[in-house]
Length: 461
Image (cartoon, rainbow, N blue to C red; front, side):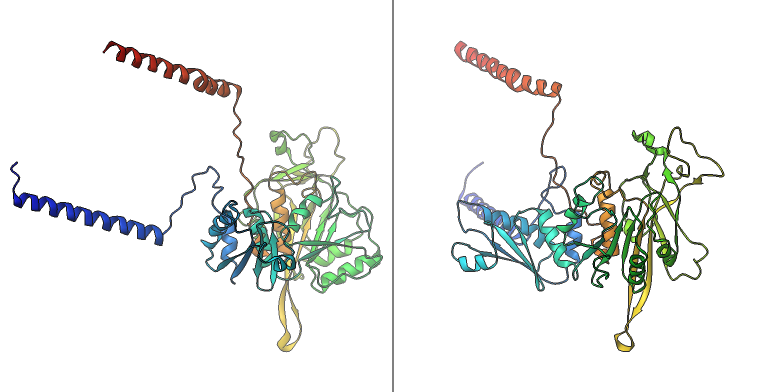
């Protein structure tokens, strides 16, 4: 091809156009990357992405959130960068989260006044309440937001003095592990002995009666009945054969506690030999069980039912939210030897293990009149959230859902916190030998052989 002045001009023009277009495209890409952000989390469990439960919680927070981080401003320590990266995940779904940094070294007075303990501690403010977070984890931050969003003082008052299960107890039958976890989410517990202080506080989110071992006194039962009549929320937990002296309370709310223990033969297929253990896999529709898909295990459960005689006159809405398996039955004889369903004597399943009761109550008069919903849950098994059995399947989540519903914290039902993923790789003996053979023998040997071949070829030239 002959090079002329005209062809040179064409080449230069093409080069100039190419450079201009190339720079334009690069500038547009730079502008787009600055204006728009796209991230992908390829980890197996999505541990670098907020869990669905956290995202749902952020959608339920109507007001702005202010987060103050007391972190040292140092280029040698990446504390501030880690905090920015973590909270950016939250700001992506709630853009009115404000993040402010304060250097403890330059503002020591404010740091002491806020009670800061470690470098990088977060102080989360929502409305007129604050929460401190010392560990930069999604679970801790989300739990703090949950506590801030709770309305009022959420205190569960535990009845004591009759051998009940303890909210802070460490024995196998107590509830210490369960309520310690709930304490991190803003739920408080307190104990009450009606014999020493014959009054149930109106401020209690709910009264909890957890498997008393001796019958309550008549005066104590009257106080509980009056508390329920005035609109108090109640969690009543009992065990098979329990004599608690509260038959009149059961009559007030229109339920019957049936004798016997539930036998579930389906548990044998799962390796459970104790016939008194029941497994629930399917749940009737109710706010407590909404989108709940875990198995729950109930050791030594009994059955409940609504009193048909008072059903039409009662103002209680009674719902069965926990039913035993269809193959189960209520064994009325002693739980010994070979058990089998006795037609005409035993009660055929499925039967109710848990009942949820609610009714509308009006308080005040005239302009101050308002309607409140009273809620009661009666459970015929006290072991399912005990220290010994809490870790089985969905027992803990079911217990949390029950308490959230009783305490009118419906927004927290269905919000389990994502647990930390397993970051270890466990290899079998065969896989370990194979990997060692490849990297310690075959790969070095292959490199050595290829090196020798290349050296011999070059030597022959």
